[in-house]
Image 1: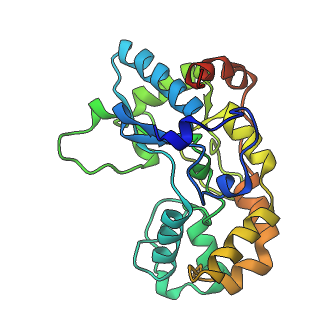
Image 2 (image 1 turned 45 degrees about the vertical axis):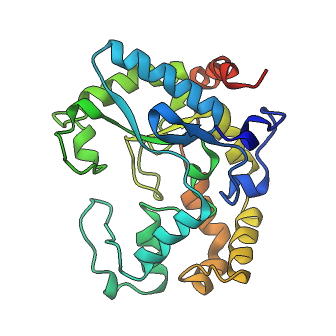
Image 3 (image 1 turned 90 degrees about the vertical axis):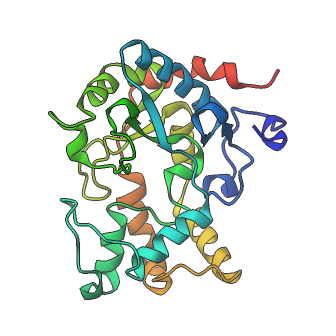
Length: 260
């Protein structure tokens, strides 16, 4: 963990606007044994949950954690330019060259967040697999079918349904709400994520995107996104599952990560 993060005070204080939008890393640190960057409270809870899963024969492993603004911007721009594939709501390829304006933006948003609006910026989110179920040298792909009955990660999905909330985690994208598609691999650490979402706003997101543009880091489709930002925020950022009370109560686990 970086000295900057270790010395950060007021761990229970809300994340700042630049932390919420992934423009700094002052609220996260590296979890070396997991090769993952997370908020310290989320990291402590993930360690505990991984150990519990191992006792039940699962190798719970994070394949994605904190993602900064620049990384999210690169993903967005590559998808907008057609350099990365776009998928529909059934995970089938779309012809990106045939999509214009609002249709292209909507196609990106069902699987990828606007930079500044990704929950991964908060350090509370991780995408997980059962590494034991992944064949050697097989590329990691996050597919809903793998987490469904009969899929390679079905035992992990069942285990998480029974135990994740006891460690503070829940699935924010548990069902289709007309925005982001269900993501059974995506876990959110409720004691950090809930206050982060409550602190987020279209105004904070707008400032992050406008500030990046002024510095030359322009969002592809910027002129089409900005006038619709409030509606996009409501549909693709705010429309998520509420964390269960049991997950919020697991905040006690996070205390082990606080500096003395």
